[in-house]
Image (cartoon, rainbow, N blue to C red; front, side, top):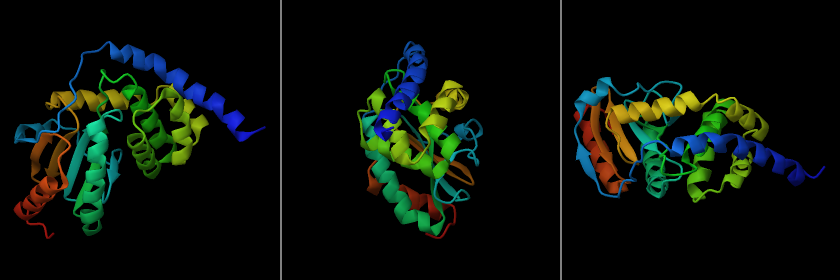
Length: 233
């Protein structure tokens, strides 16, 4: 049997199973996509409320890095796609020192019709194929916006995950709780737009902002936070 002929049913399985869930979530309260305006807010009270970064998180860089950039994002958000490139550049430059890591958390907007199913599929990719494949899948999704439902199976395969295992994971709603818990916690700490960034140090939250911030802005503030926390650049 031709591989392409065999692959089409897998695409249908993945998309068909997750569309019903997405339709339900679309009826939830609306959110506004953030404009690329940098607004810095100091919210030290968030520290006790934010979910602690742990081994279950999607971390790019040293999991034990003293400085962690926690990003809440949506795979259908164009500003998030733009910001993805900036954060990769940050990790390429700061990652080798082991001092800075990037944590990606889900915040699918109900106003984006495919966002929830993309988040659930991404989490199932991580669940079945691991963190490295999750990041490959995330990069593929951001690079190919807007994403059609029928393309998800192809992208799962391209990232290196097993489409059949991912489809089973999605159908069993294994990752739903995680996706919704991350969004609920984000709402509790004041996230009301994306991409939303919280920069953590051992002393707690150092800063938070909504925007696809430019590289120079992040670099300046990361250097300042490293110095403030007595960490060698």
